[in-house]
Amino acid sequence: MRDRSLRFTEGNRVDLYETGRDGLAAMLAAIGALSIQAAAAAEISVSDAWARATMPGQKVSGAYMQLQSDADARLVSASSPAVPRVEVHEMKMDGDVMRMREVKSIELPKGKTVSLEPGGYHIMLMNLTKPIAAGEVIPLTLVVESGGKRQTVEVKAEARAPGSG
Image (cartoon, rainbow, N blue to C red):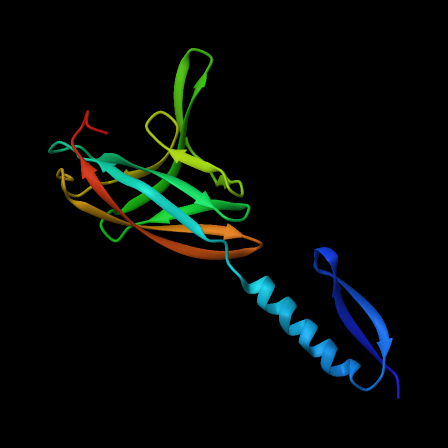
């Protein structure tokens, strides 16, 4: 009896070929290996996460950090149980005017460090109900998409006094 089966070749390409009865077991093993590979999420590392401490009455702040991914990925959103509204923003020059706007995502190219920093990409903390004191830790949840799958990354950003970050 001849069955059709799959096999991996260089670059994880899958080829269909005919084989004997043992081909069915090989085909199932190949499909299982492919499923495990597809389910693997990007590994995201976060360093130097911090938020800007605020003054009484101040309703907004920013959070900053360094992000690195071991696969091409995108930061698509952020949230925090401590802050009513959190958005991913970018500041950039538009002619002679610095403009800030919400962005749909920030690309995280494989192996490259992406800086979220004052004057560039950052996490905007909005509608603050109380000041953020220096030393306070703001919990953030980042949502990262890679290979069509979304995953969350938990971050703790320590607040720094204005002028120290």
